[in-house]
Length: 352
Image 1 (cartoon, helix red, strand yellow):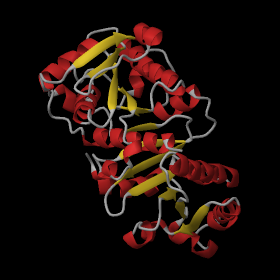
Image 2 (tube, helix red, strand yellow; image 1 turned 60 degrees about the horizontal axis):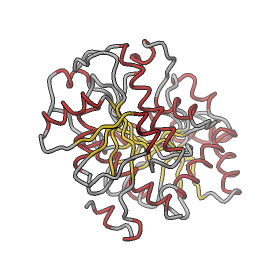
Image 3 (cartoon, one colour; image 1 turned 90 degrees about the horizontal axis):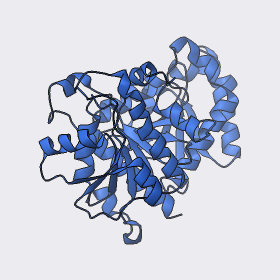
Image 4 (tube, rainbow, N blue to C red; image 1 turned 180 degrees about the vertical axis):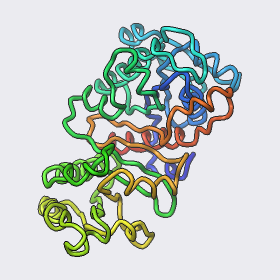
C-alpha cells in the first residue's frame, strides 16, 4: 500500500470502484490501463471499459496471470456490476468496429472510444462508479468518425451539464505540486482577453470547493500567478494584475477563500512558497505546466475540477509510435498515479 493510502483512516480504506476507460485502442491506453489496474487491484476495484477481445489478448501477452471477466453494456445496464474477487478485473465490452492494428488509427473505431466515456459518465452520475480514470484518446479518430469532439474535458463538461470546469495537474515530490489553469488551450495572443474578473472568480470558487470536498482539505490555500513578467511591475509591464487579477482575488477573499497573489510566475515555484500552498493557479497553459511536467512527467495526473463526478487522467498522449513497437514498452506510471489519486479523492468525498 502506498504511503498516501496508509495515512487514510481504516474506515475510509474500502476499495473504491473506478471506471477506467482504455482510450484509443491503437495506442498505449489498453496496455497501461490493464497494467495499472492489475497492479492496484488490492487498492481499487478496477472496471475497464474497452474492447473485451482486445483487452483479453493484451492481458495474455503482458502477463497470463492477469484475470479478466467481460460483460456487455446491456448486461451491465440490466444487472449492474457483479461481485468480483480482488484477483480479477471486470471489463465492460465496448467493441470496436474494426480489428485494431497497434499504432494505426481507424475512424471506424472512434464511436467505440466514445461509448466508453458515455457508459462511464452515465453510471458515475448514478453512483455505480466512485470515479472515472481516462486513458489517452485520439481526438482526430472521433472527429473522423463524424462526431465533433474537442477533448475529454469539454466532452465530460457537456455530458454532465457543467458550465465551467478547471484543468489541474498534480505531481512531483516535496512538496506535492498542484497547478490549475485560468485558461487552457488558447493562442498566447488571446490569453489576456480571456482573463476576466468573473471568470477568475468562478475558477477560484471551483478550485476551493473541489480541494475541500474532493481532496478533504478543510481550508485550501491557493497562490495565484500574475499574467505579465514580474506580475506587471506595478503596471509598467501590463495592467492585467491591477485591473483584473487583484480585484478578483480581493473578491474571493471576501467570500472566504484563502488566496494570495498575484505573484511573479518566475519566482513562485519554490519550495518555500509551495510548502504552504495547496494549489497554484497559473494564468495560461505554458506558464504553469512546464514546471509541473519537469517535476513529474510520466508520473503526473490530470484532474478535471468542477464536475459533479471525479475524473482523473494521465499526463501524456496515445504514443502511437510506441504502441506500434509492441507490448511491454509503455510506462504505466502516470496511470498508476491517476488511479491512486482518483481513489483518494473518492474516499475523501465519501467521508464527508
